[in-house]
Amino acid sequence: MTSHVSRARIDRAPEPWHVRVAEGLPSAIDHVAAAAPASHAFLRRAWFAAAVDTYGGPVRTIVVEAGGMPVIALPLRTVGPRVARLAAVPGSFWPFRSFPAAADLAPSALDALLDALAREVRVLRIGPVYDGDPAASPLIDAARARGWKVIDRTIATSFLLDMAAAQAEGIWPRNSTLRKNRFHEKHLAEHGALNWSFLTGADWPASFDDLAAIEWTSWINSRTDGRDAKFTRSGHGAFWRAAAADPVLAGMFRAALLTVNGRPAAFSFDLDADELKYAIANSYDPAFGKHSPGKLLYYRNLVDALARGIARVDWGAGDSGYKRTIGAAAGPLIRDFLLIRPGASAALAPLVRLAWQRR
Image 1 (tube, one colour):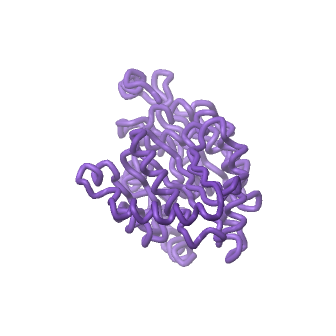
Image 2: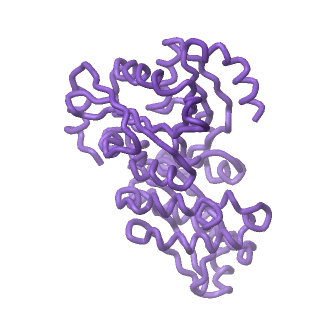
C-alpha cells in the first residue's frame, strides 16, 4: 500500500497536466492504483490485462500526469469497429468496472482527461459502478458540466455489512447464531473429518481448482449453462487465474475453504482492500447442504476477517435474504453509465437511451 508521503506528493503535483494515450496497458496504471483510495487499489495493470486477455480487446490507456507523476489511468477497450469510436472500461463485472485515480484529485485533472477522451471516443461505457465511486462519479459529474450526455441504468442495490460497528453494539455475531452453527457443525462432521482453511498469496492460482470443483457440483452448474461460474474453465476462471499472476493481487485474494474427508465442500472467496472485504463468490456442494456448510463457512470467514482488522464487508448485489440475515443493510445503487461526447454524437442520445435501457 502506498505511503501517505507518496500520496501527498501526487496530490501536490504541479499543473499543467500532461496527457498521453498509450497503446495497451502501461505500468503507470500500477502507480495510480497505489495512490488511489484503498477500495480501488486492486485496479492494477494485471487486473485490466486479465480482463482484456479473457474477454477481448484491443485496449489503450489515457494517462494524466503532472511533474512526471501519473494521477489518472483510464483504460479503454474498443467496442466494435475502431472507426465507430465506442469504448468501455474493461474489468470484471464484480466488484465493479471503474478505473484508478489518485485520491483528492484536482478537478482540472478531470478536465484534461475529458479533453483527451473527446478526441478518442464518441461514447464511453463506465460500469457497473457504485453511486459515489471515487473515480467514476467525479468524471461523470465533470462530463455533464461540460456538455456530455450521460445515460444511466440501474443494475441493483448493493448490501453492506459493518461488522465492526455491529460488534461494538454487541449484536454480531449473535450467540444464538453461533450455537446453531455449532449444532450444524456437529452433524456435518458425521460425513467425515472437517478441515477449515484460509487461502491467499502463494495458494493462487492452483487453489482455484478446488473452488471450481465445488462450483461444478453446485446449483450454478445444474440449473444454468455454467457460464457465470466464477472459477471453472468454462466460466470466468481464466480471468481470476490470470489476475492472480500479479503477486499484489494474489495477496488481496482470499478464500475460506471447507473440506470433508479431503473433499472440497464449500468456499467463500473475497478480495480484501485494507479494512474492506469484497465478497466475490461463495458456494457449496449440495451433498452436504442439509447442514448449511456455506453458512458455517462464511461465518467463520467473517469472524476471522474481523480479527485481522477487516471492518466492513461489501456483499454486492443479489440474494438479499441471507445477506440481511447476516446483518447487511442496503447500500449504494450499482449503475451502468454511457458518456456521449458533445456535438453530433450527443444529438443521438435519446435513441441510444431507448435502445440501451431496453437491453
